[in-house]
Length: 207
Ligand code: HEC
Image (cartoon, rainbow, N blue to C red; front, side, top):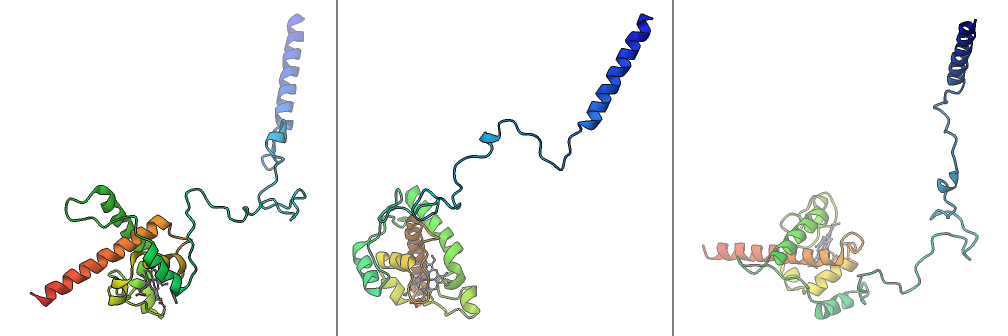
């Protein structure tokens, strides 16, 4: 008698367990119940959400006028040819071309970096050797003057930096894409191309 009772109880237990397992199976198309969801949904405003706290109704606030990003030195030049010449007089390249075989690693690194910058940002118009035959120029963009010509050879480093920073004529500013250090590195690369071209034409002049 006792055994029968026990079996009935066990059977009932199994039925309840199976029934609960089936009925409580979670629906994969719906999210689970969340316990203390406050930590999941932050009370902070999203950057681009409207915001009643600020006078202009926006969460993201513009920096205070005159704010300077850490490490960024302000350049006090305008995008004019006069200021390009002034930059040529006032600014000097903080980096130097590697001098001969015993050049230090830093100047080699800067020149390599300048080569990379040139290949990424300048080749499309100025071409691989700098004479203005990049693919963009060959397909209708006003071709730039050769970087190996007199004008660019005599242009001071600071003025070239100004051209990269503010643009010149049909060339746009590269300040947003290329950091100030990389602009100076690119100037180094232009100087290296000019030196190679000068060495080539010397060889041709006196074979
Ligand atoms: C979209 C094409 C284009 C790209 C990309 C470009 N340039 Fe230029 N660049 C020009 C044109 C066009 C001029 C001539 C602008 C003028 O004076 O009208 C020019 C002028 C220059 C000059 C002045 C040359 C002179 O004799 O007056 C320098 C230096 C120069 N570019 C360097 C660079 C460097 C370095 C880069 C890469 C960071 C670069 N450019 C990227 C089109 C370009």
